[in-house]
Amino acid sequence: MAIKDMFSKQKPKKRKYATIPSEAAKQDVPEGIMQKCPKCKKIMYTKELKKNLHVCLGCGYHYQMTAHERIESLLDEGSFRELDADLSTANPLNFPDYDEKIAADRKKTGLDEAIVTGVGSIEGREAVFAIMDASFRMGSMGSVVGEKIARAVEEAIRLHIPFIIFTASGGARMQEGILSLMQMAKTGAALKRLSDRGGLIISVMTHPTTGGVSASFASLGDYNFAEPGALIGFAGRRIIEQTIREKLPEDFQTAEFLLKYGQLDAVLHRSDMKEKLSFLLDIHQPGGDKK
Amino acid sequence: MTGLEFEKPVRELQQKIAELKNFTSTSDVDLSDEIAKLELRLKKLEDDIYNSMTPWDRVQMARHPNRPTTLDYISHLFEDFFELHGDRTYGDDAAIVAGVAKYHGVPVTVIGHQRGRDTKENIQRTFGMPHPEGYRKALRLMKQAEKFNRPIICLIDTKGAYPGKAAEERGQSEAIARNIFEMAGLHVPIICIVIGEGGSGGALALGVGDRLFMLENSTYSVISPEGAAALLWKDASLAKRAAETMKITAPDLRGLGIVDEIIPEVRGGAHRDAKRQAELIDEVLKPAIELLQTIHHDELIEQRYEKYKKIGGYADQKTGPKR
Image (cartoon, rainbow over all chains, first blue to last red; front, side, top):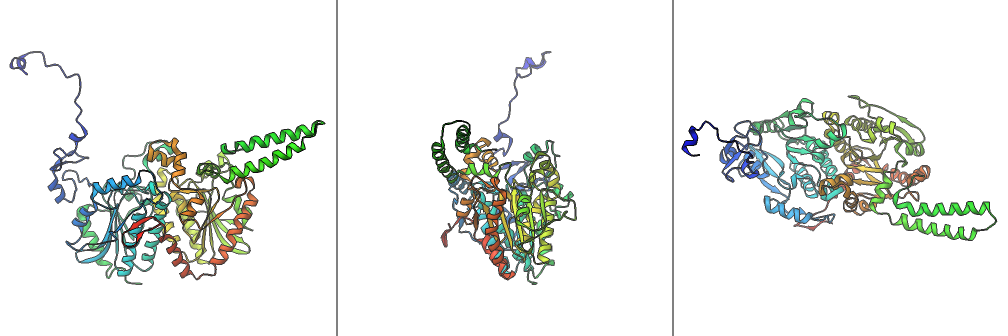
């Protein structure tokens, strides 16, 4: 703008077009250093966010956590011993493009599958942990996820210690078809065995926990918890809207919605997670050994 | 007769034979030689067509509007059936029927998804797609069967659990999960038979047991072929391709070690003769129940766990690839 224009009575003409910020510009401004909250748009240092357990400092929005971030932030340092790390995806139905998708996600996430299992402790109390990671194939459940959970539950039975699962999954893995569905039965049956032997089961549903995962092990805890704002449900919102031909409420299938309808024991803020789990492990000591 | 697309050549030939027969009976010309020849050809054509059904053909057959439903089989298979209602908490879901009956003189509990046989009934029964109270009714009666040591027979025939607002509010996920969990530990024999469509978690909630049988032309899948096509390829019209890729037919599931036995169907599909189809089910069901009743319940539950534990296909670097 020239100086004389500033005194001009005529306001500068409005631009005829709007500039639309690119997707990249809207999010993570300079890659990695800063983060913008997808909910309240607050901009924070990634370091700060990490220190706050990946919870927005402005509005309390719970970011998704990777399995390893979860382990690092929740378990006693150095206590985690991974189980069954050598299980990996085969392509049991020879589904087209499946191998490539798995390979790409392995590279992207550094994980072999959508779950990490192992034995670890919280404030000195041991448990078997199964931690899902939604960054790998949407956390979907195929044969490896099912098998790793079943083996982890068996380990909890063997060691007489509690089983704690953090779920994050879009549901069944389509590319494994019926084998994926059957993992619901496999994991459910394993948890039944643990339960019948007096073992403690805690499920914490994180964003998102839907479909076949929500309709199996995620809902089978002696205690069922969820993180704030997590999407949890069986059928997808769009399918339901098409079926009943009405718009669903904004909070439909959120953790708070489930709590209201009696489907959860509590919604736990991430900053309280360790303390609450530690309390439960304490009151259940010696933990699953009272057959 | 309602026929399916792939059966069209059979229908055409049947029509031709009927025409010739009609012509022979009303005129002096004797065409019985030709008719005999055509009937032979018809038999061969039927053999060809029904022995080489594609997965998509079977999907059509499993969805045939006249396909026998749970209640049809119940009337043929059991001597007395006494339907029992309600989950004692919320309501009675007509998409699942359940009750006690006698099977060859032995008391049993029978539970099954129930589609409607016409539009009105379909609306009342939400097209055989259960709400949580349906699964909870089923579980209540399974627990009752356990208490009184009765074998449980589950007939599976659903597109899936009902996708609705109320169903989610009342805990559709929990209801399905609970049934899977409890069925894994019931002390009595459980036999599950897929009679039509086995759709996803909604089917599995009646589907954990000691034996899983499938009628020859039934299907069992994690998602409908239409749903899979929409999800994977963003195009529901690729359902036919999805049906082939997803491995959803009885022979496919037998091959994957999920189904214990395939129950043959009446030629041309179960809907041609429900009574005869019930006999074919009986031939497989009766010996299975008799065998399972001889097994102690601890052993039964152990075997049930092992059955599900071994399902899956993955690679184990320690022991090499599985399947």
